[in-house]
Amino acid sequence: MILTVHFSSKFKKDLKRIPEEGSESEQMQSVVNRLKNGEKLPEKFRDHKLKGKYAHHRECHINPDLLLIYKIDEAKLILVRTGTHSELFK
Image 1 (tube, rainbow, N blue to C red):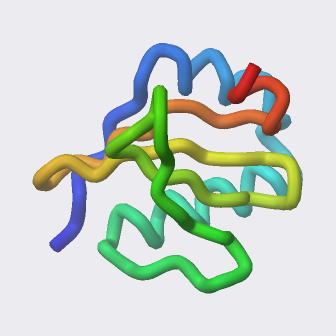
Image 2 (cartoon, helix red, strand yellow):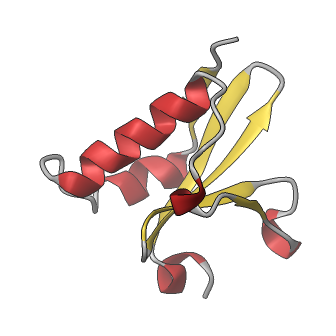
């Protein structure tokens, strides 16, 4: 099943900090496409559940210090936040 992608307002702001051209943008698009298509992410993305403030969410690593926080809710892929560890977990 293909999920419908939704963007939180914070994710939209976070995304503006990532250059549109370049490997980070391409990697982000690749990960979002995999998630949207219901594919399991390869181990290198270190996909895992979160606790605390982001309970019921998941996090994966686009690169070593660029994270994507997302949630899958029924037929929706909700992109919640993206950024570095220090930006997201202050």
